[in-house]
Amino acid sequence: MLWVFLLFLMFFSTNANVYEANTTDLSKCKVHYSRSEDTYKHFYEIADESHGNDTILDFHFLVLAASDAHILFSPSMKLNKNDPAYEIVLGAGGNMFSDIRRAQKSAVKASVRLNNILSSLDPQAFWIHISKDGLIDVGREGEELGFLSWRDNDPLPLKYFSFGTWSGVEAKWYFDCYSKNGSKEVVKELTHHERLRHNLLFYYDPYVRPVLQPLDLTVIKMILNLNYISLDEYKSVLELRGTTKLAWRDEKMIWHPSDYGNVSSLHLIGRQIWRPDFVVYNAINSMGRDVLGDSMMVVTSDGSVEWNPSINIKAWCNITDLGHWPIDTHSCLVSLGVWHEFEFLQLHFNKEESNILGERFQTEWEVVKITIIDNFNWTFETSTNTLPPFFKIDIKMKRSSSVYTAVFFTPFLVVALAMLLSFCVSPFGYLKISLGCLQLIIISLILVTLAHVIPILPDRVPYLVLLYSYSCIASTICIFISIIVINLSRSTYKTNIPHWLWKFLTAYPTRFALMLPNVQASENYGKLDDDVPIINTDDNVQNTWILLGKAVDRISFIVYFILIVYAISTQY
Image (cartoon, rainbow, N blue to C red; front, side):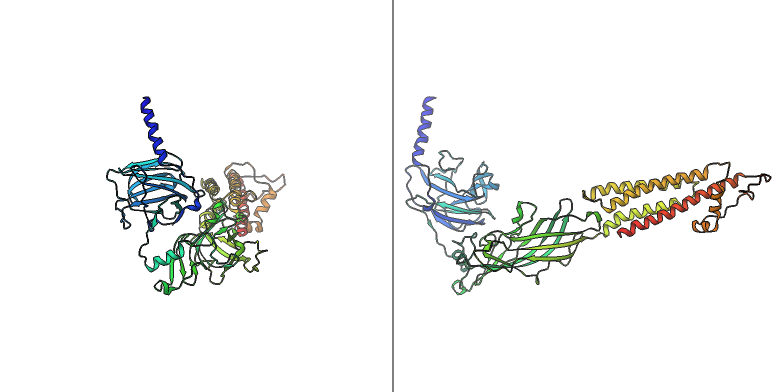
């Protein structure tokens, strides 16, 4: 076993002498940018170097990318998707794993799960060794052992390499830092569009404001069109969606069309050139900068840039009027501005061409009024301008309550009608108590539903909750009154009701107001003469108590009717 261990050490010591770790000075490296490209456009010839062993390629490089750094080694520059080539992908799947492929985006031959192998902040150094017998080995700079390897039994004759990324990913590559015979970029025949894009974008830094003089002012013109508005009362979040039109002048994107086959405009997507970074200052989270979507930018030969991205704003809104739910009205303020280099930016908002109110919002909210507040008209002074350009949208909106009214107010009308009917039905049937129970069932169901629909407001109870809560109390009293009336009407009494009460109930004004029937009693009822015999028949006695029960019903009907009208009129 000892001699096997010694051979193992000798093997890796030999390889360590051939592949020494780089301590790279980036100023001596060649640089290549891959900007949101999922195809290989720029190729380099592989330098003809002697490595002293069976290695045909000893490639050292650094890459600055968040994920999906692609390197292609191929026999030819003209490749179709399925043509044989070696594609090495670092940090694929959102910087989760790495692959070796034998074709572009397919034919995976080896894969290793290695999280966060790339970084968008610090360049990461790697090496790639390809031997004559088809062994491909990939490792980190400074480490002797590779983390990914595969052997091709039918090795390809490699002549070119190229850099790329996944769509939407940008990468910066450093290579040929200490190579004696550096690789050479292959200059291919370009169309007018390709030549124009290459000349304008190759050294273009999309994160630097596009002016020739650092103190020059950049003016951004803006038009805003909203087509969706929504308010989440549970989370106090206002959401706006729509489109915006932005225009500015890029002094680094100016050319003479006659020099490029009369090409007068370019269509660009992604961050290939500079664009303003908008931010919502009162956004609900740290993603307030992801306001504008990705869309095509049109650049003309005079440097004019037009960009029409979608806009999606989620901002905090102070919910204060839930007490009037579902006819509540709210005012929300959205503050939108520019994040970087605001001291040299001027934002001009075109109120005349903007459509803030929208033709028709397909939501439950109706915009009542919108006010624009801005600070665009400041005087440009490089020494004193410290306030970022912004504009605030003050939106006043009310809920379209027709659906809620039908759902929640209609049951109240049923409850109110049941209350009034319970004072009109006969006390000798079962319907009087049944109507009271029906009221309680409906009210209980509505209150449970409201508890799930209406957000909890600590300082004020919504009107509908109060309405049904008081209705529950009124329904309980209604049942109690019904029980009293039933007992007055059904119980057997030996004496009539008090004479003064009888006089009051049988008086014409009382009978007219309460719509009481004309009930006959004994002719001697109420006389104090001891010589007159008092003859009380059972029917006459019972009729007086029934009359009292009807009077209680009529008075309760009037009181409840007034309360119901008041409850409806105060809100609607």
